Amino acid sequence: MGAKRHFRVWRGDETGGDLQDYQVEVNEGEVVLDIIHRLQATETPDLACRWNCKAGKCGSCSMEINGMPRLGCMTRMSTFEESETVTVTPLRTFPVIRDLVTDVNFNYQKARETPAFAPPEDLAPGEYRMQQVDVERSQEFRKCIECFLCQNVCHVVRDHEENKKAFSGPRYFIRAAELDMHPLDAKTDRKDYAQASMGLGYCNITKCCTEVCPEHITITDNAIIPMKERVVDRRYDPIVWLGRKIFRRDQLSEGDGLGMSGLPQADGHGAEHKSGVNWHREVPAPQVAPVGDDGKLPISEITFDRAGGPSPFGDDVTFPLPPEGLNYAHPDRDK
Ligand code: SF4
Ligand code: SF4
Ligand code: FES
Image 1 (cartoon, rainbow, N blue to C red):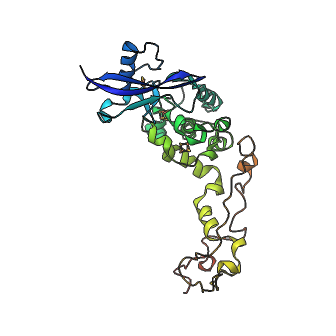
Image 2 (image 1 turned 180 degrees about the horizontal axis):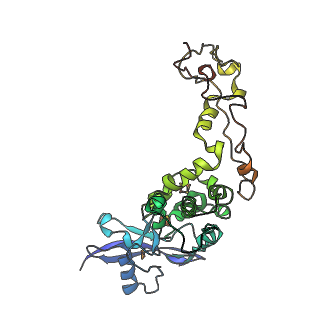
Image 3 (image 1 turned 135 degrees about the horizontal axis):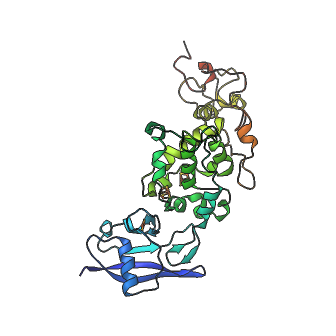
């Protein structure tokens, strides 16, 4: 017989509940789901918990274990200290049905809203051909087991019920990215759709979703960031971002240490700014995305060729910028 360990399990329903303490036997090699089953078999036959495969493949046994979203069937008891209390609570982002079972309908709703694969019109079923190389990038997204741990951990909806309407979440961003990279998908505006209608702009790439994914899908780096980089043009273009930071025409005033010529002048602090970074220039106010009341970007944002706002460089500037157009000491400035 194994040692007794201290467990705290949330018990309750949509009207409320609390954590209850249990001393449960734990044996070598067991996982948290084993302990939940032991509780059901011994002390609390009415403890509700969803599970199916006990092999990390069905995505049913999602729960929060010591505050971390995890699969109960893939969390070994050996990962905890012998004296550690193991606290098991339901997923926080979704409404509780009972005990550890939550209503994940939000995710199915978002799945229905995500446009399906669009086969090419000039090919009949059976004529589709793909090579392995065509799907190399998107294949990892197919590993998703729909455990919704990423959806649960994402701060955009975790404590913000009001964002759920406009935000599909990381699981559906990888779906959009997968279809966007699909060699036969005929729908060409996946990225724009993700930005305009799935709330891609809400994501500030904290990477929490990637951290909790039991399938180790690199959600942020491989799906979200590539879509963000390409989708809305200038707003997410790193060159423009850099340009906004270092060169704004409306900031080229005396107080910046640079005149309209872009050449060094006496700065607002009485010192001549000749080399190094001009620390005294005014930092531009951050620009927020023009998101409407419903949390969506207006369609003009993605169709307008200057989407994302006017260029911080103006219309008459060619690249690369001349050395005198920069407000740091370019090595070529004095040549
Ligand atoms: S990276 Fe984006 S989608 Fe993922 S958890 Fe963070 S905000 Fe949410
Ligand atoms: S992407 Fe990962 S964390 Fe999100 S639902 Fe799929 S398997 Fe779960
Ligand atoms: S029971 Fe299927 S993933 Fe845990």
